[in-house]
Amino acid sequence: MKSGWTGAITTDVEETIKLGEQFADFIEKGDVFGFEGELASGKTTFIKGILKGLNFNKSVTSPTFTLVNEYDAKFPVIHIDCYREDELERWIKLGLNDYFSDENIVIIEWADKMQSLLPDNTFHVHFSHKSVNSREIILAAT
Image (cartoon, rainbow, N blue to C red; front, side):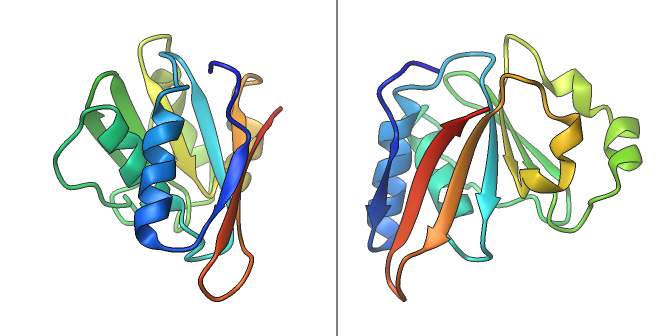
């Protein structure tokens, strides 16, 4: 990931998507992002912005039940959601490590549920509610 992006506070869906688009400018092939934070704090909305910023113009949904979505954007994007599956052995059997490559961008929602399986170079993005209408999105490298 290119340096320069640290985070921001957004006050609505459109701002969160726009911030995701801006974040996409800093992404490089091979980056892994662990998204962590409260339910409904903007993780999937931010990912929609990232994909928009990576020239993906189709529908983006959280893979809460399918576990993994793959998007053919500017770079291949792997979108993983651990909300309903926190058994580490299942993720290993599903081939999680195969997604971590120099060619893919990997974005994991609820990454704290699989912390021990993440590569050392994972960037953590923390989402939190600041008020009813605002959220804070902060980047922290491991």
